[in-house]
Image (cartoon, rainbow, N blue to C red; front, side, top):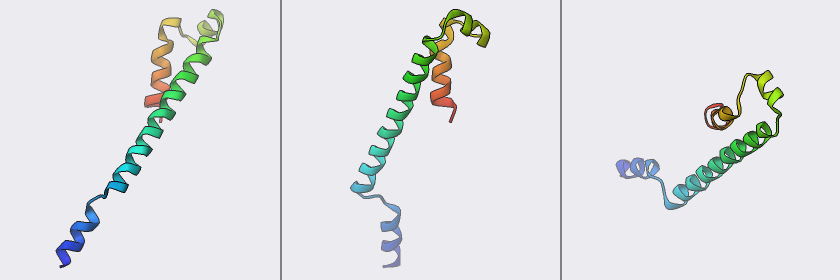
Length: 72
């Protein structure tokens, strides 16, 4: 009997799996929104402002990606 209770606490029920799925989707949505917002803000900058930051327009997507997905 002791083994059965140990196994039961280690497995996840369908409700736990569903909750984990929902949380994962919310985190993905938040990161995607951060990426879009960052890209939109940097795209609104003028060429001179980008040059002052040491960036070119071709780098904006990679910088926004780095901020959203690797910046944690």
